Image (tube, rainbow, N blue to C red; front, top):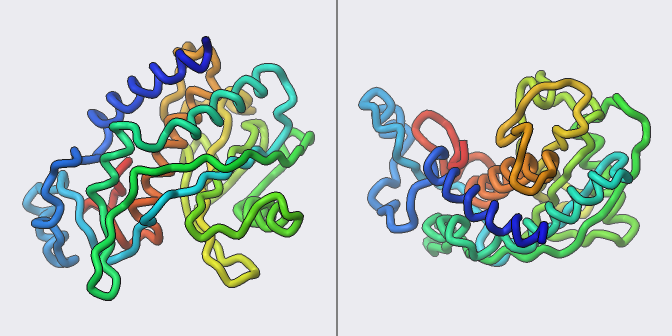
Length: 263
């Protein structure tokens, strides 16, 4: 029953985000809006900040593989329910009407135009148990965790994969000079693995277990599935995934004001 409710929530979430986020409909003519940086700057002064531009960078074409990594103590009943719901969300995200918007995004490499696929394949979930509350973690903690899971054979080196790292909210995470929940809700980036491959990941936390009572994107006291952690994470999860796919290295698709498609 809970998972059925989640699918309904999924549709509602997509409808909400299409209205509130700067993602354009799939029939929007992107081809006529590929502009240089100079044109982008001029469009800001002209008030044309609602047009998203391709700036030459790469996207993630083909099926995107998803690996969920839970970092922290998720042993409670509520946390286990959260994991079940988030994993179910991951398994059903691809080929939804909302995600299909991404099929209008493309890259041009060597004169060949390649479109983003609507396919998302959930591969597996992994757990790194950390019981110490208020422990400080950093981006290095996250990349080391991904690398350790690869070294142990639990994760593959997947250049067309996205490693989704979800940490328990009572851990202290600072990035870009600000803390989670006070300065950011989630972010995406890449790192170079020891194999020489560039791996993609995004990070978000569980606000229902946060040590500080600060709200985040999609965070409400009452949610459709009755699990604040899962319903909050779903919003940021979708946000960071579509930005990873459409703006892989921060130089592909973004608006004239610098925002990516889900900002």
